[in-house]
Length: 83
Image (cartoon, rainbow, N blue to C red; front, side):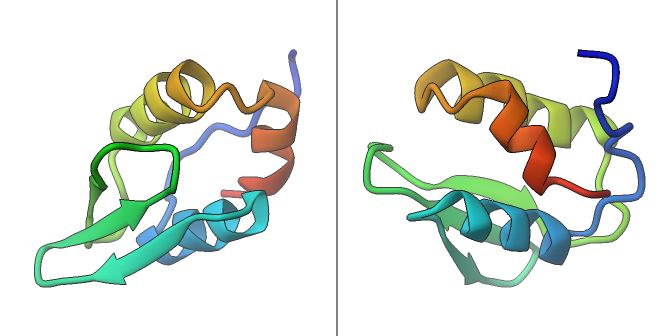
């Protein structure tokens, strides 16, 4: 897939919005991190609450959690993440 976004300069709010559009995700804001919850995950995963997010943090969430654990199709993920 050659039309993947670069995932640079993503804000935590953009990631939470994209996950909300994917369905069943809930973002709980805290101090330095946002806890992202999903019914199929055994525990929430943290997202740093700072802008811009490191590109490797965002790619880790996409590759390890969304594609790896939740088996969400890559095309659907990159359709929702616009940063």
